[in-house]
Image 1 (tube, rainbow, N blue to C red):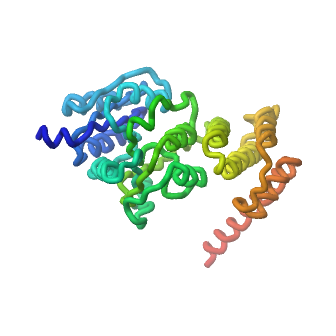
Image 2: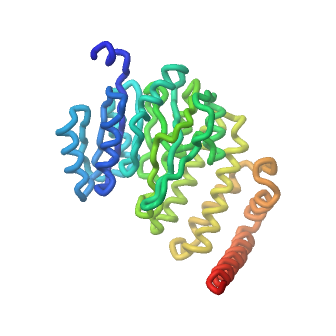
Image 3: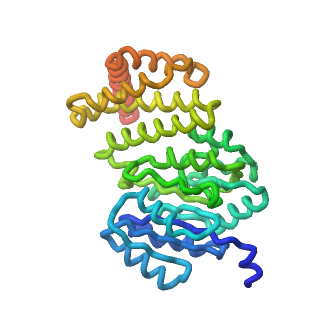
Length: 348
């Protein structure tokens, strides 16, 4: 047993817990049931007022690998930072408390790291919706593919590729995390933290098996409508800081990163103008979005954007309200077409 354990480095799994009593037992059960046994499981109760804290304590009493930290609510980033400070493993992983993982996930990621010498291992994920069938993601890609930090960063910035910004479908060598902490008080913190960590890696290995189950639920923090404007502003802040990092450390990716920042400024401006104007009655937020857009370098982005989006960006730079008007007309046309299609379905 001890010979086996000596060849199995300690892996710290950090689980922030907040108002998820409905999902928590399934999540924790999937972690303690891992085929990789040398785990340190850190549950950070972030001021939950439901039965989550009691569930955490019960699991701790049943499994000595679990430690529970109870604290006042400080947000997801703060909870993750507290978990990182408490972690003693040479490898670090994260699991969100409403998700769950396949029994072989840590084993498979650790094997990939040890076999390739990579610093970060990434697996596929399955997107879950309550009451719906699982939707496998990236399940048909050859396993064990190695990427450089620059290649991985490019996929993260482009979005929708094999390697994405989420922290939870990965296993990290502690050395690449170093002293990088999550930006506290922000939503979309992964948009900054993940690129900073990825940029430290010598190599990233991707295994195609969809071993992480990501639950999409309307009541989660990332889907609250009343947080829509704040989510947008936090996203812009994270993308702005990401752009500064890329410009300094990976200048070959500056053009693509600038594109994503500028597109986000446009989208948030239009979204507030069409749907959340009461939350920006004096126009101060939109003015700041337009200012940040105009301050970013005006690359020729046709190769990434295509003509339509490049034209939209040019229009936004010189006449943002004209762009908003065009979007408003397009929304009305789309709603009309949807209504007519639904009416035709009912009469057929």
